[in-house]
Length: 208
Image (cartoon, rainbow, N blue to C red; front, side, top):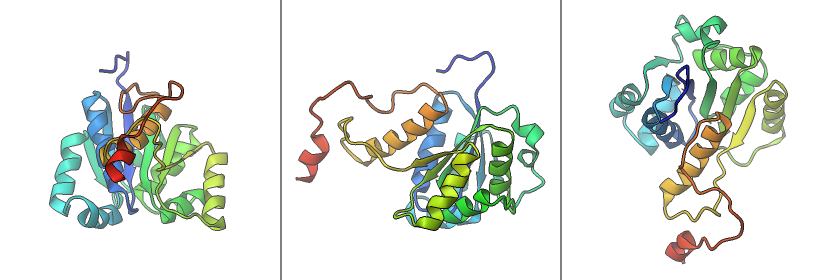
């Protein structure tokens, strides 16, 4: 359990990219750690979840269960639209980040609640992480990512390591989620940290 004088507050934004499982696992872990979370989900995230993870009803039920408040991206009148509301939050995560969302934020297009909050977070110098799962990245996407990095955002590719002796897909997901938590300065034990050279072959032994 995290012990803070003021409870840690995080906003998680879910855009319409493949990899919805990263946001769902992140919310589950944050809930278990006692972190206050608000979620903004895009229309595309519902469609992706139906293909990859949960149908719409179960997806919304999951968000309600593992977060304190949820908003759809159409709710531009919601409290997170205001930078004054965001001032009390410790950090922000767009997970996963679609290339469409990346491009809009990089060029200041605040046409929905996700892009508006992300742009506001950058503007007021808050910690914000963009989890990119798309691959490969072309020159246009790299330039957009660079624009965001120059503005203070953190670009985090969803690239798991293998030195922590993963056993299954959850271990690989938890490595990426753990990296998000590291950047948010939230303590966790989701993956084994590098302690020097050691044997880590369990996943290869399962595959080969």
